[in-house]
Amino acid sequence: MSPRLKSRLLAALSLAVFGFALWVLSDSLGQVRWPEVRAHLLGLPGWRLAAALACVAGSYWMLSYYDLLAVRLVGSRLPYAQVGPISVSAYAVGHNLGFSALSGGALRLRAYSRLGLSAAQIAGIAAWCAITFALGVNLVLDAALLLQTAQAARILHLAEPWVRALALVNIGFLLAYFWLTAGRAGRPFRIAGGDLASPGWKQALGQMMVSVADLACSAAALYLLMPALPEVGYIAFLGLYALAMAAAIASSVPGGLGVFESVLLLALPSAPKSELLGAALVFRALYYLLPLVLALIWLAVEEIRRWQGRPAT
Image (cartoon, rainbow, N blue to C red):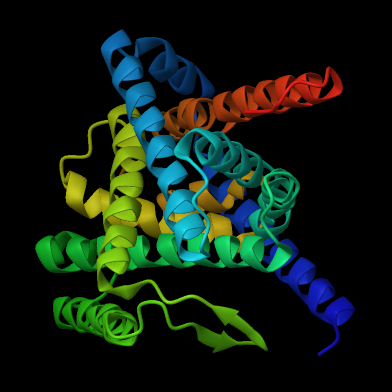
């Protein structure tokens, strides 16, 4: 398949997903009472907003370690002080613009190449960041499916035995990853004509811990903003959130707009839609827009410092 055809198919798929999300939202928005949305926004206690903001900060802090782990895997010893801002900015831009592998990847390419990394190393960083996220989503889903089986079955509209079977299949993938990496530390995988360094089991465990912590923090931010969900505990909600976030990122729709909300609406039909939408709006402001503004400020400062002949951080 030619690169041009592949890019067109991906664009068509993203449009199709976006169209489906709009259809789901249009059906649900008809039931939304906007005065209730406004009332939910104005009625959020200050401590909940502060706690949600702290959770968002924790999530982006963990995201910075995605890159740090990946940088070490490609053989670089760049300090965290340089890697952290690049990672946070790349994720903030990628989350908002969609096609994060391209938008966030372009920022990584520009920033890391200035620090002396090769194109192959930067491609490896992007690949390992994606793998780290996938590992976390898998582990979080498994925990939700096994620890909150009844709630997960109700959310997914599946019988409990199928929920457990799905969890066991996912655990099989995690065990396979550990088996593949356990004895290969330092020996690369050969993928698509290129070499991808193997992490070894300790670094693989670090990938999972960082990714789970990231998802736990960002899910907690949204959970704090949500209306009361007596039938859905935090663990079950964490699994649902991971699924919604994975769908939003995979869709390549800018900001996962509509896709993220559609998954929540489909999985939580009993939740009050007006308050759910209000919570999603506040979450978008905290998790998407605020980090994007901060990332753009950092990028502007770095460019100004470079123009003035000062070393960039």
